[in-house]
Image (cartoon, rainbow, N blue to C red; front, side, top):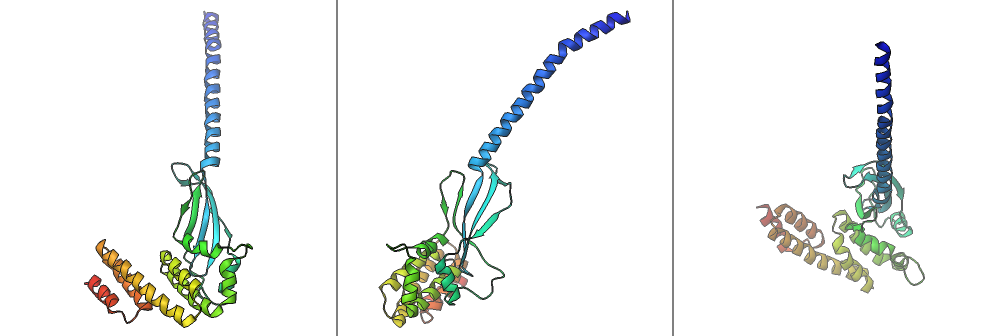
Length: 242
């Protein structure tokens, strides 16, 4: 009787084992396929890279890391490399821009891209376009201008530095346009003050209309740096605080 039971058990095991083997094989094959798909997806859609600019020190750096697509979970550390160009180094070396305290730098986005997606641009890209501009001989356009127009350059870069600190990169093109047309530094300084006084006042009024009184106060106060005697800016600051 025992032999009969053993024979039945052996036949059952022989009949079941191949099926279990196939199941494990299918599971392993599926897991391997998913792993390959995940790896390829991460390699294609997971890389995140871009560039940042510090208005405190006029330095630039690139960054790179991998994240899990869709879920946006960071998978690797962020790797950074300096990308400061010769013009930016010249401006810092000559003391035209940058602060002495580099222990607490703010980094603003220039551009970023994830995988094959289109590139996203930050406001700092507006300034970096000028810093990277080149002439027909592939020389940095504003580096050459700075070296040839040092007195004008002192006015230009001091203004650009302050606008970058205030995160008002959108006003940078106005300042470069004024500098490009100017031949006298006191006149440039006055023209910049008048122009930026107008721009800050317009921005402050816009923030009031949008219901952002705190932003309006900040802009009005910043604008008074360029136009300290403009009563309309003081009135805007007082009205917004009320």
